[in-house]
Length: 104
Image 1 (cartoon, rainbow, N blue to C red):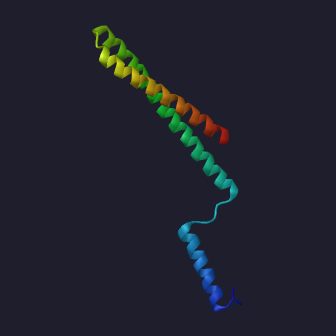
Image 2 (cartoon, helix red, strand yellow; image 1 turned 90 degrees about the horizontal axis):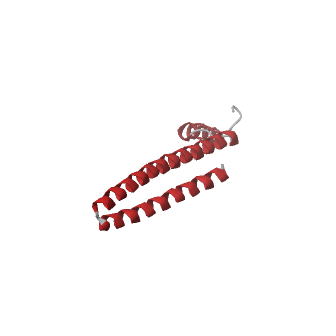
Image 3 (cartoon, rainbow, N blue to C red; image 1 turned 120 degrees about the vertical axis):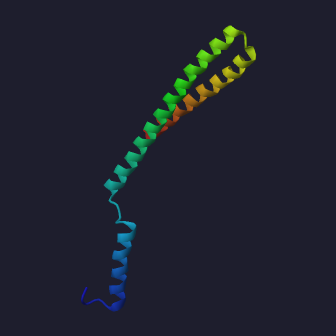
């Protein structure tokens, strides 16, 4: 560094300061680990959301049965559409999880 001109010394100084500000360059292993973590987190989030939807599906089924006993057919029809929509979302979450696991 002693043989460097003023310009290269300045460049070296800024390069070291910039790496301090923006972090050092990650190795491929670190990048792989970070991506694996992100994929695992996404899978957990999808599972959590799917179980929430399945719980909601069971609740809708119980509400449909209750309303059907009371003879509220208009409400049953609306809830049945909601049930179909919920089941479609559950399927989508399962497919998304499968796609993530394929790339994992």
